[in-house]
Image 1 (cartoon, rainbow, N blue to C red):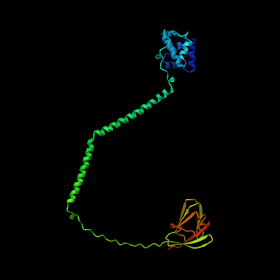
Image 2: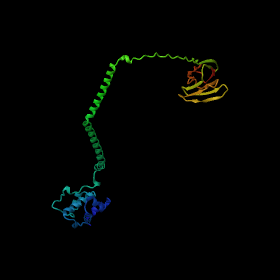
Image 3: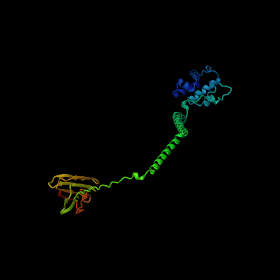
Image 4: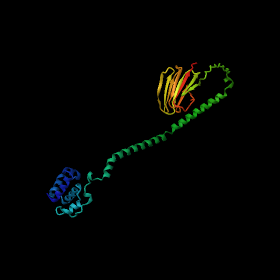
Amino acid sequence: MSELGNRLKQAREEKNISLDDLQAMTKIQKRYLLGIEEGNYSMIPGKFYVRAFIKQYAEAVNLDPEMIFEEYKNEIPSTYNDDLPEQLSRVKTHKQLPKSASKFLDLLPRLLIVAAVILIAIVFWVWRQNAADSNPGEEATKVENGNEYTNNVENTAAGNEDEDPEEEVQEETPPVEEEVKQEPETPAQTLTVKGKEGTTTTYDLSGAAKFQLEVIAKGRTWVSIKNGKGKSFFGAEIAEGESQTFDFTAESEITVRVGNVPGTELKINGQLLQYEDAKTTPQNITIIYSKE
């Protein structure tokens, strides 16, 4: 094995490239590559091809061909022209292609698909335009039909005007006056203060067919509700902005204990209850319901 062949073989093995791989990369027959490594140039047809194959071998393993030729010029056969033309160098392998070229090759199929879709859309649009231009008669027919319909309507209206209007006059029947039934007035409810003792205020509710209580929390408050016999209906905290509604139509008396009077509104059948004392808290509000 020659020094040049040993140098090339060592570079190839460092890159884990087999002779079969190198043959695929350079398109040089494996036996010629082996002859270069062994220094057996006689099997290669001509000195010109010896130098060309050595140049391609060096490029494939990332060695500078000019430096190889200069360092091992005594081993490499010389030709009349040592400067090999650039076109004799085979196309670089895929491993030597720049990254930008490799990315472009990967994107090429997608670009072709996008271009095909755009081309199809343009062809379809042109076809639609040509189809619309080639059928102007349809639009004319529509206009003529519309004009004919308008003329028919006008002729019909003119014919109706020529008829004797006296024939169309019909005797009008005087409207029958309906008897208006007056519904009995519903007595308005009254909510009055009956008395106040300490923190307890008593109200009388009369003139109401029902007794519904709505508790509205304008601020955080605590409310409990019991009837006159001490039965508890509710006792909990109500968060700000929430409300609770109860139906006490079956009760004759209830007591509402309000923990935060300024932050609590009480409505009786939709009517806002006015506190006698809007500052003292807590308070007991007793409502006596007189059923009609």
